[in-house]
Image 1 (spheres, helix red, strand yellow):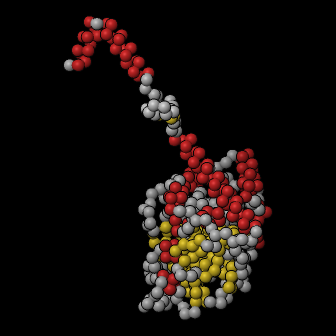
Image 2: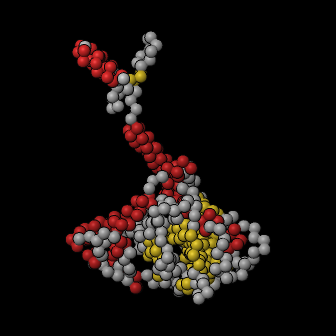
Length: 400
């Protein structure tokens, strides 16, 4: 009814149309546009006008830049104190900082990076790209089984390059060797069910390995009557203790990993999770970093009792491959937070599981990442390492 009435009014009184249109135009011109500066002025007499412009993106950039600058300044002060020989406690991220970091779609980025790695490069482009990578990360191509860069069709083949047989001799005089090329982040005895990922920053042993439900796969004698802690469940022989060693693989390192000793792999547990960076700086910053990230735990036994090797994923390292396990698929698009998948290598037809020899090929990463060893050994087991040292596959970790 209102629409026809207004039409009649405007048709009979043309001046009304012009007057109303001018009035509306006057009122609309007084309203601010979405991209204009909004002025907030005080109505009180004598008070100066207050103008404010709120733009989200510049505000976020300014806040983030300020926080980054402050963080770098704090790190600079820590480095200066360390140069003076003063021990500086690690600065651990709070829950908000961890939550913000985990909100970054690192799993999606890692899957995209994995697909990019499988794209074949033109022959003329391979040498420039691989040479840039070699220069950036200090790759030693003289150790590669194939030194010709044009032989590698894509980045994935280059990352997973094999070494010359004589490039990594396996030490026979020590019972445990390094499973990969990398850097020693930390090593030592496990105390109070806490493992140090770097000095001063720990993670829970039970959270890292998950519930103790694989005992049936590992047929070794255990004192299950009165275990006082999760750590006691893993120690099977009197007089033994639990040891650990963390090896960080940088992007320029050899990406395959090998068996660190003679042992029997009985069980695999896959934890889907985040794919945060595991470089030493982040490991000092985020507590329980290895528990947040996706990882594959291989558990079994060696001559002294319990033995496990865990491959921890990282940013752009969603792909963790175990050569003898074709059922393992990592970095899936969907997963349930806090879930894990168990698989037993022991069956009616195979009571021994998978037997691995020291130095034998075990698996590979798509890029650099981390290997965590947790094993039971006599109390007189000693590491022949120093924290932060570079190590290569086949070199000794320790002996009894």
